Length: 284
Image 1 (cartoon, rainbow, N blue to C red):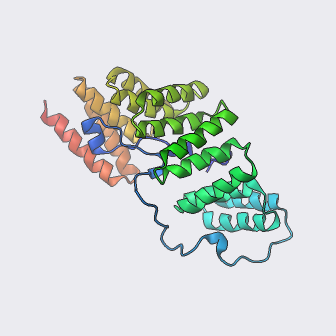
Image 2: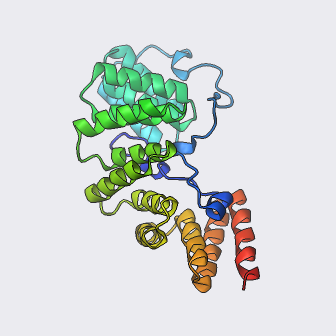
Image 3: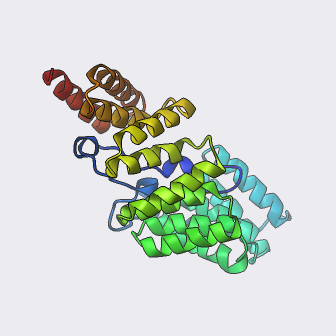
């Protein structure tokens, strides 16, 4: 999670698959959305904050939330959840504890608890743009696109400079097939943050779907200048190079994508990219 207390924006990208490159389709979504139903993460029999918790220590809620943040940064989200719960035992109306606990639940894959905690954060602190943003993200896990858009829009109304909210709302618009509106939001996200690799990547995907290969290649290139580890950007740009007749650049990009997918442990994407490389080579 980020210091600002929001779900990492690096997860807000259209996800590459082999079929995606092959057919030119946008197959999205945010934070791994795609499963029709949520399932609890393995080994979690009940919400962690309902498990037995020791009596609150004589610390303030703020101190306990800070402790939870440190635990989250170390990757110990379950310990963080217990710290946030102790904070709420001291102050049951402390919105930051709900917000951070929701983020930790998201990190361990318990999206229902994340959703419930973000709802509480919004109820207690209705002027908190980050709370609305995270609530919008949580709704995407349940394919509740209208609720997602509503909450992203509320976050933007509270903070008109919120690049991540524009980017995430764009992804949901793309899911709904509203590509022109997605493009408007992505333009705004980039206007707010010219170093936003995910937004360039998503705009490249949108231009691809709209049939504008040249603009898509430019956006993938911009994303890669900012983040050279975006394997999907290499893959998508490579496929567009192939479609537009630049086979040498296509092979270079697809080989780079395959290497990155392998390094990043994305075995299925690696194998799909190797198949595409063979297809390009056989076309010569």
